[in-house]
Length: 319
Image (cartoon, rainbow, N blue to C red; front, top):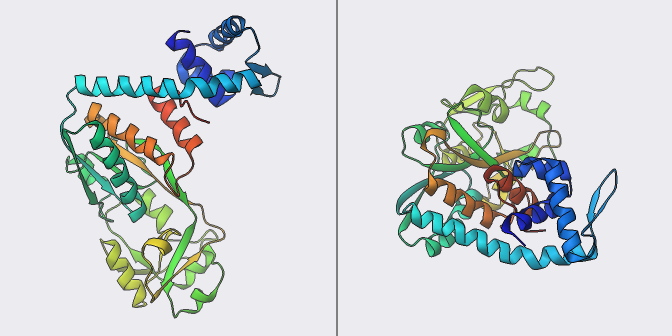
């Protein structure tokens, strides 16, 4: 069995769709069908059951997938490592984060990365609330894991890593703290923290000026750091929407985190300056996504690995 045939088989076993498999691998659906038929002829049994609505692996196909995937992953990692060594992945990579859970994931990825590439050093720092993309553009950071959206023409966005329900940070003594949930319409009655600096589309998503019904939302004091946000909220100066995970990582007795029942999730993903992309960044991004597939609280192994494969043209080799 050739490596390309294994790749096609594993991607189809992951996607369960000939069209998506062809798109991901950059070939025609006919080529996918041809390879699978050749493999089935060689094995002597069907590998997939095809209907007009779905593609399902047969017991033989599932067993072949499970047997091939670990070996293919080892081959893929060996190629990545050899490529990295060939491009001399050494030196310092500066990685920013927003949210303690993002920082923890980067630290976990750093542990794995440095066992593979001992000549590398990963420096980690928190991203300021008021300057979302400036450090990337000035090369103070090479990569960051922070809140989306990130709709910048010179910035590349990776897949979503975390997707959390939104909560409103309020003083623990406030009447809202006793409610089971809040609404976006409730924001018209309370001032929100102000942040100067991020793009307007970013602020509109996280700190809107109006409710869905058009009611104005009062503005509170301005800040640039998350710990300042928590202090201002605890003092009753303003409220602030955030990820519900903040309740686990920033639990303080004077604060409460009340979930919204009508707000979209807050998503966190990787971004880097497009013109600065290199083998070092690509390799660390792959490591983060590999670790994220089994990291608590991420969007899930299937979605992360599938998005990784789409971006880098790699099969996931996992189910």
